[in-house]
Length: 301
Image 1: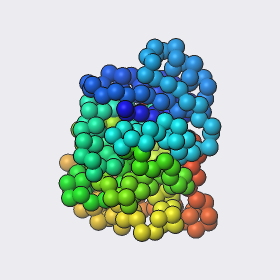
Image 2 (image 1 turned 90 degrees about the vertical axis):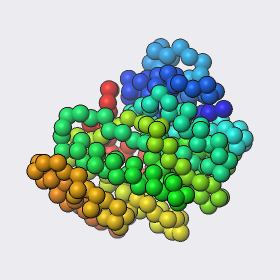
Image 3 (image 1 turned 180 degrees about the horizontal axis):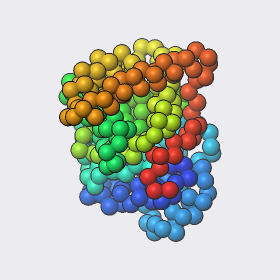
Image 4 (image 1 turned 135 degrees about the vertical axis):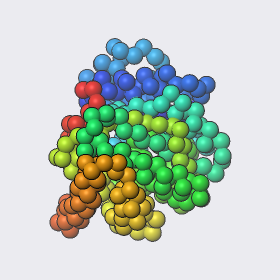
């Protein structure tokens, strides 16, 4: 059994698209879809638009994404290691063979976590779209290399899956796509990159949204230093410089793109400095439902 958990936040149109992408999967796997949202209105719209017994709605208590996931792990967990939880969001959608690719990776009993491949869906030719394109391309290369070398790496919160019956909760004061893979790694499981399991993502298209999203993400990852100080970090300022600096400057195909990459360097440095400054002021990451709304990443609603 595969339980697909779609966490959403009052974006019914996008969530319906996310659900339908799973219902249209080219797979023979047995699965259920659990839509988690703190707004009862979403349940009403979901039941009206989708008539499929495999889809259930779970009213989120509003204590944060991690809190909701912990409840679902305990309520829907079977304790059977051949069962799977797939975690994704309501504002993204997956390729038609995503479930099959993920399930295939779990045929290896040593696999504990499987992460999919985020793919940007913006086609406006904007600077922020280009930034996402370059970043996603490099992340893809690094994850593929680390997966092949059987190294630890953090998953993508847009789409990743875990083996049931191994963990039943996790610390909620950091990002789930970092701490959960580490908990599996500590138990001797592998992290696998299923690059053919694509998940399509709309990225921020303005400075305010991009800045807020990235600072919050950095704060979540920096919090790992306090929770699990021995965890091998793959998302950090040092690793961005090591893995991305040379790569990024080689990507531009024209003068405009070169100028955008120079801006990208300074923008990434600025958000890290801002995140570090806020952390020193005890403005820690909070596991809340999008404590800063990122309007431009809402694809349909």
